[in-house]
Image 1 (tube, rainbow, N blue to C red):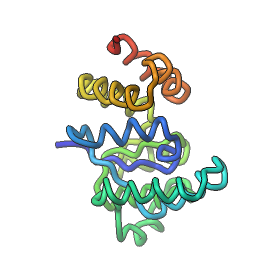
Image 2 (tube, one colour):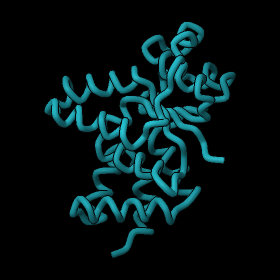
Image 3 (tube, one colour):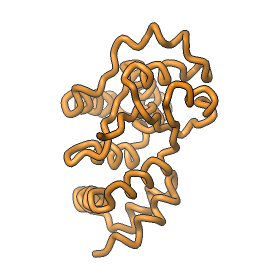
Length: 182
């Protein structure tokens, strides 16, 4: 059975990282992604305000998420928010994870999800570097195949692509690098 994984807004906002992670959720999927409307609202705010994406690109991205991942939206989690004990800013993420019985939350903001608060919910919190290493251990062939697809589509060498990935996920990049040969 594949793990159900809530992706925090910070993961969805990094295009290089998000592209790889979402491709790994497509057939043959290595995990089942989930997010809430509020997570997407945070993502949209960051894309618009912090990253200065054009509105048409933001809307195109949200539309693509709705089209390609229609079953990934966690609903009716709001009553659980007040029961969460992690950082107040990210209680909605923990509540969405609890609602959909996620095993993992992937986020760069580990301090907002202390182990002592998440463990009773049966939820592990992973940095994307750790999560991608886990997926690589699960099926290295699928991960390398997806990276190959991305590099061909984006007209990048493996080295160019991995340098981008390694800015956020250095251990994963170093682990996968020997498996990518052209």
